[in-house]
Length: 109
Image (tube, rainbow, N blue to C red; front, side, top):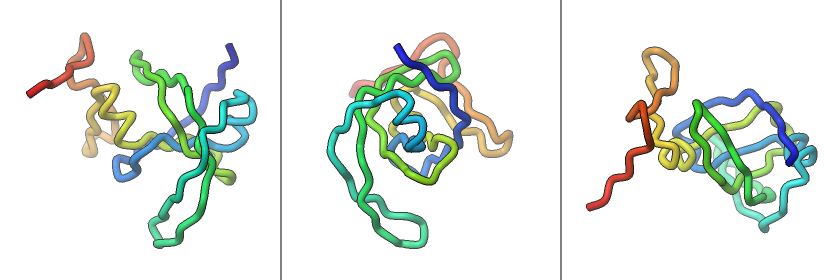
C-alpha cells in the first residue's frame, strides 16, 4: 500500500476532498471520471476525480473520492469528509475536534 502524508486545510464551504495532482500521481489513484468545479471567483473548470482514497484524520478514517487539483500543494478537507468522520470545526480555536470522543456518532431518524 502506498502512503503519502499531506498537510491540509479544513474548508467547510468545500464539498469534497481535494488533493494535489502530485499526491494522486504518487499514490497511483484510480480515475473515476471528471467533475465541474466552481471557484470562489465563479470560474468553472473541469477536473479529474479519483476514487478509493483512504484518509485518516484525528484517528478516524474513511474511503472517499477526491477532486484532483493540479496546482495545489496541500489537501482541502471538505464537508463530506467532516460529516463522514463526525468532526466539528471550532473556528474560535482554529481546530478540528470529534463530536463524540470515543466513536463516530450516526444519527438516524
